[in-house]
Picture (cartoon, rainbow, N blue to C red):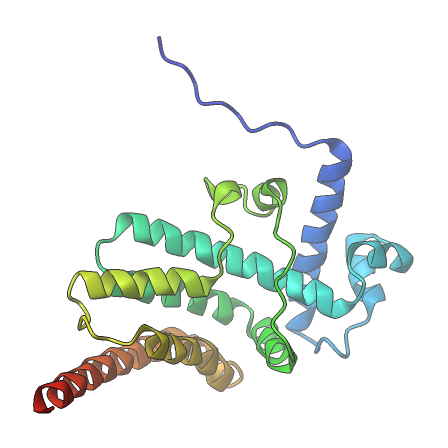
Length: 235
């Protein structure tokens, strides 16, 4: 006898309204950041769009930058989900890295203003603070079409890239002595640097530039690993 898959529990009304308001505020923020900077944006403009009082806004987010951090979480979650899907479907570790960067390029091209604010916000952070994890219900409401996102391991995009590079090394796509920390610095530099360089004048070129930069990164990794072998052999 076939047993149908269990359906996720219904989200209580009060929780659902609370979470939906948070998500709508994040969506409103993204819309406004394409026209004005975070500093110029007034909380009342967000509240008018979501039909919320200014006083109530601060029950959801103590300050505007907390809402920006939340938007960053949502973006990172979607990107991590996409990367995890790619890891489960592709054998090539380098192909997964490429797919993740392509997906990020689509996000950045769709919202260059938000991209700039997110990068600037991260650059201003004096210490790296771990955000509050998103609940399974919040994930489901934010991305209802992303199957399994509510149980996705709470990991940032960096962990997806680490797993992808490790797979590439195991499969011989990269040299076995490739230095993972160095590779990660290069990948994160490209990830944030390319959108920052192109978002104002040529956001449509982010994907192509990502592809070119990744070619350079992999070539550099192989060359550097070869030099290590020569040095070791010489000694």
